[in-house]
Image 1 (cartoon, helix red, strand yellow):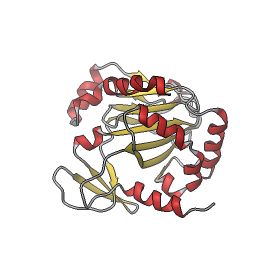
Image 2 (cartoon, rainbow, N blue to C red):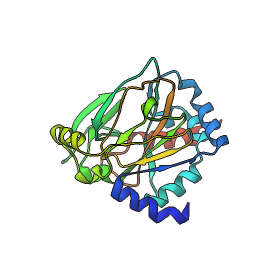
Image 3 (tube, rainbow, N blue to C red):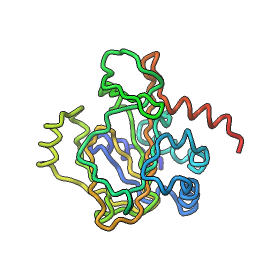
Image 4 (spheres, rainbow, N blue to C red):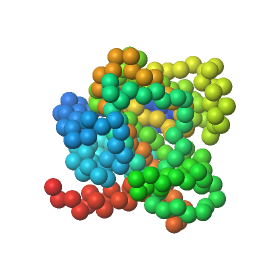
Length: 241
């Protein structure tokens, strides 16, 4: 991984995404699939690292941290985790968008933090662009996903535009080149949150399971904390099994 370090960071800075083929070897992939089995019949589960310690344990964290170092994210921690399974029963379309929210421990009035929501005991907020620009998303493919099976589409370099309005997103998505991020099971997609991305409904809807992890090395302004990182650390340290 070390010899690729400058390449990963440089490509993320310019393109906003990198695909790493075969990031998980076959035993690692099978271990992660097995850990996700209890939630594999659901189309979307949030806070999986916090609520499912077996998934946390199934990941090769040493390998992940080497990767984060290569992406100029040394010291980053997982601050959000989601399991997706797009399949015949849950086959949805995701229009072009940026990932604009983070999960925090409480609601408080702070300059630049807006659009507060509260879902399933978690506070969500849209932070300043600088917070999002310092984050990195890692999407691990548990199944093959190509154009026929709703692979993610991205617009390279669009993360450099900062936060975009709906009309700006529409204009860019209609004129810019799209890249389909076809992935095999075990591949990893690194992506900046502000990169424009979307996915169609699957034309041939088999399972498309993805473990979506968001990382940050930053601290939020007090009294805000990353909601999942704090809970997850406490939960994992207490788990003996």
